[in-house]
Length: 517
Image (spheres, rainbow, N blue to C red):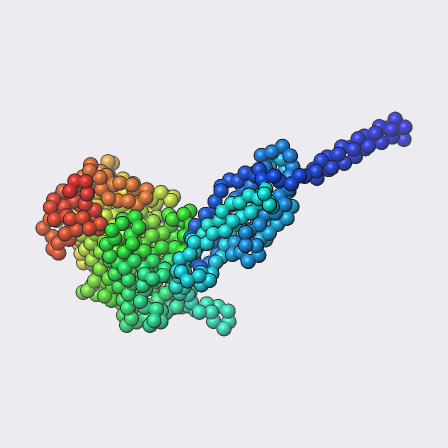
């Protein structure tokens, strides 16, 4: 081998080794931190959690802005191993860490979670605070951790001997197989929901036959994923909310929502299942209820007899449902001062006939969570199955002093099978049906000059909603709904959903414009 090649190789390897050793020596020349760390926030709010339910994971970023590589002698929780907080520091899990390295001009991530047992205190609601400590002695720095922990009543299906969960039968599918969902029947001592503590429901809580679930004003009910309330045949639900003084706090309103309390979930649709009034349920009454972020807000199955209301709904709002806010099948519904806001399909779907009376209601769909697959309001008197078409009479669908509006050009769908009746009427309603190409010009269902079907209709004029993307559908001073309602109705509805007087020159919809009064 050429001696010059050998000599060159030896020199090259020597230089490479010197560089490597030098660089390694430099990398491990850390100095202890001197209290000059910087943080992405000085307080980490882990928001609100229920007792014994783990929080989401929250992130804190720690910066070394200096020119020297350092190590942090101590990173850990103020209460050490007894803390109810948990940490992950740059990939390592624990509650206390020693000599954590941090290069110059670099940063590290600290991930924080908590699970707290509120029974350790005497309060139903407890603010759990602690410090996350970086360093020792005079150089120690702190970041505060804050979590609001709530006690709750937890309702859930039992675990069976084979390890599976208790289920409810919904009947048979088309092949004769039993349809089951995870759920349980409420016991007699569980049929009174109060406002003392929030409720957290796992699976479907079913109201048994001949029983009534009564829900007190101010009650908060939180549903886990794929959970809800099922009202059996012969059973009832009575939601007895009251008017609140604070329209933001809704202190007397009953609220149904998901069990994720973090702000990022505040407007996330489809977090839980539905409130399902099954065929044969009776004497259902709902007042001052807010339902949000469900898959289907209210699912109402009528018995087809239609002599008595399946449900009476007053002063209620349902919004941000993944599919439908209110889906009724052959049901009898009376609704007043009710707001059905944005949904992924229809705000209201009256399916397979039925009998409906909506007075001073607002239907408004400005869905912005993807493509919307339906109009704000839809009615039909048939149901297409894989093997047949089932038809029922639409006995009546009366909409009086209502707003039907949204972000699409056409916000009303009417579909009928001529073998059954299809009776509907819109009286003094503000309605969006903008058909510039005349697609429905010759369809008698959309003949807005037919006073039998449409009386005093306000067509395609701005309702001047306050904030549609936040499902706030009170009306402004430029609304076409102002002073346009029919006042001679029975029964009279003297106040709007917020308790504002409407006895003089009432406005169309669930809200009166307060500025004008």
